[in-house]
Image (tube, rainbow, N blue to C red; front, side):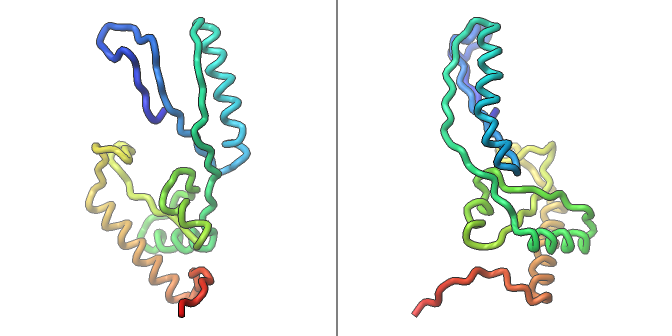
Length: 160
């Protein structure tokens, strides 16, 4: 659940209306494609049992974004060089910059540890040591890519 709103939102008052969002992600599109129907069935069963009504609206459907395998391998090598092994593999199911850029150029993602796993929240906190470690890994990724002579730049038309 991404957001939940109860109305009335008061102590010791049973809400007569609750609105919430569900952010469903998977690295596999077929799983995401099945989710709306499965979520609808689940909510329908609960509402029938409790004799309440519901309205379900899907506001967006975004496919998973595959990260560049070669760049991910290079990132894993850079992390290993920095003492992190193995590094978790992921996909971009959210609107990270990676998901927006992936149609145009190869992308990978490196996450920095946050206290208690809290992210995208004012309570998010990452230790300076973890930020520095990520910066070293990123530096090693750039250096390794440059040393290998790998051309990870897209073929863009020349200006002028």
